[in-house]
Amino acid sequence: MQECANSRVQTTTLGAFRSLLGAHARLLWQLDLQLNARHGLSFADLEVMLHLEAAEGGELRLSELAQLALLSRSALSRRVDSLVGQGWVLRRSCPTDRRGTFAVLTESGREKLKESVSTHDEVLTEMLTRQLADGELSSLRGMLDRVREDQRQLS
Image 1 (cartoon, rainbow, N blue to C red):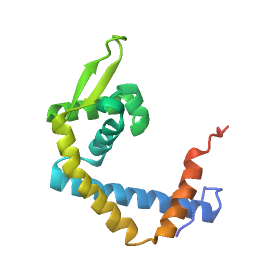
Image 2 (image 1 turned 45 degrees about the vertical axis):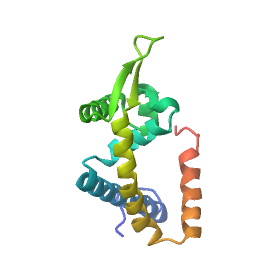
Image 3 (image 1 turned 180 degrees about the horizontal axis):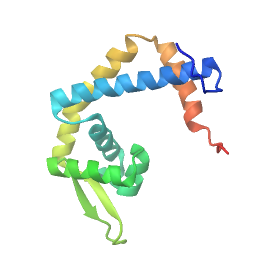
């Protein structure tokens, strides 16, 4: 692997970072490719629908959904508009706060999700369990969780 001439990060750290990004990009690319080909939806669509399914009543405030899906409010709004257009999600105004809006998973969305999850699982199984043993996957998860959950602020 090439070193970055202007980076002061250790070669091992930079290599780990690049490997993480590369693996992430490859997984998302395969998920998008297979989900679009088989079900006509993107991984980002599926992720939004999975968050809604997991929520009580199959609905979340758009602001909360944006945080869970790691999307800006405008990006989530476009994603929800697309899902509404497909009939898989609907928007509902909050009865107690006129500024608030909920995204609600429809019955059609639940069916699409049910049919699509098998492809999601197949891609992850093929790309991860084919390459890594259970112990390696557990270790990887633990390491990545530590990085993800670090609450220190960079200054």
